Length: 124
Image 1 (cartoon, helix red, strand yellow):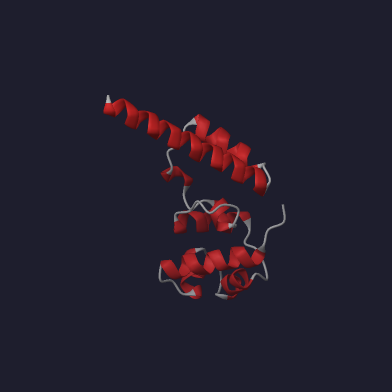
Image 2: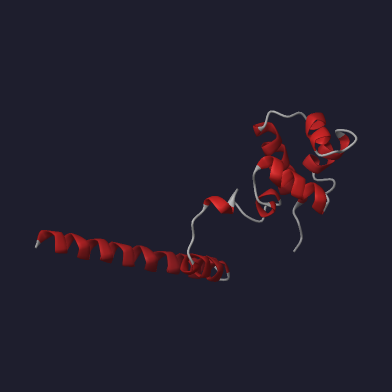
């Protein structure tokens, strides 16, 4: 999978700013010699090594997938998902946009039906 270095750079810059760190301060925390590496990561000129990605994910309290732009879930350990949720999420990602919308509509319909049935039971 091709990594979009611009997305990665934007994520790094946003996360760095959330911690109120300068490029130089982040470089020091990561054991890098100067701010030029951070500047290059943020511009998308280069991608961090796996070791630096791991250090960043710990520092920023996010997953490497989030850092690399592969996920919009910042920290999956904060999400409580059971096996059905995981299977569904994995399966729906393989669908094209049209079929994802159909699946979403089916679930919304089932939830509405369930709520309606629960309301009817409450009326009895």
